[in-house]
Image (cartoon, rainbow, N blue to C red; front, side):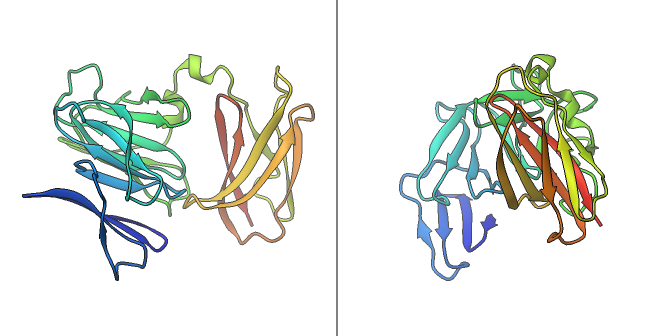
Length: 249
């Protein structure tokens, strides 16, 4: 079961299977027509519902629903998947009973491209049961529950392959911590065009977005109305998204 605002979604896998949905905080429920068999489900921070079709079948893999669980479509096919989880903005999937197969352990899924980035470095067990994060922590951390215990990573962004990092834009924030306004700087991209700067709470809720021209390489972010706390600044490139933690005093 998972929730997003007033929407609840519950999957059932006993004598019958299906996904039940509610759009009024659980007062009324509706069975999703023709929903796939879902063993693990969860909303991302933008309200997209993801679910795992488990085991070994022609339907096994990661599925998604853009209408809170009523209709579903496949993201990609894969057998023996066990779980789907999220950090503040990203989607992660895990595999359970096939630790020696071509797809195993834990992977960072990129919905825009359909790519999988495996982040199994230093993970001693590749039978994954759950992936999650703690939004109240001051550092971005990913927790992974396996057959031999729970493990945490604070630098899983560094496991992205070099080929994927080629177009990454290093993002700098000054001052940080910030009180009134922050200056965001980044190298001018080789290809001219627009880039998106967004500001998120650590829970993933977007509170600010602006389109910038990459020919400048600098933007002033007004922070006077922000409460004290930790925020995530996102710089979205055409093929990569850069993140930076910002502290508001």
